[in-house]
Length: 177
Image (cartoon, rainbow, N blue to C red; front, top):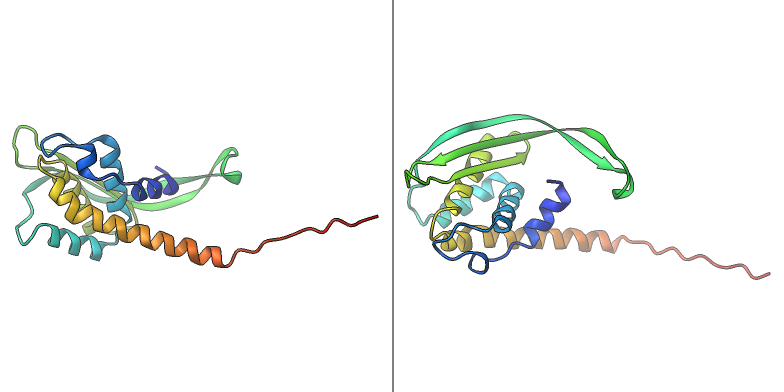
């Protein structure tokens, strides 16, 4: 997923109530949106938000399917945004995959991938992803994803406004003969 599509997915995150009932699995677009929010949230903020969302309870037990590991991913670009693709360079990424122990039969699998080398951040994001797939996830979605999504949207808006304030309009004068 490109950075622009991830940010647009995060900014258009639908509410959990609009896309899934309390007992139904999440819609793929909803999951993609919350994973984008988790991938763009800094570790300290993610950790604090997850602790607040759990309301003092301990997180569920899980087993690693793929412990957090750091590697490289090729970043591709396009000339002018629509031209031929080319390899721009490599970026450091960290990924993790875990499975909750309960419910035993249909335990959800949490996945996380983000830029950088923060293994704990990948663990927290994968745990949040798995917990958001449990039945009755609407409360966790409202307590965790919605505030983070709102903060990320505000940050993006502030950056857009700052960039717009430096915009220069060029006018050409037609010379009369």
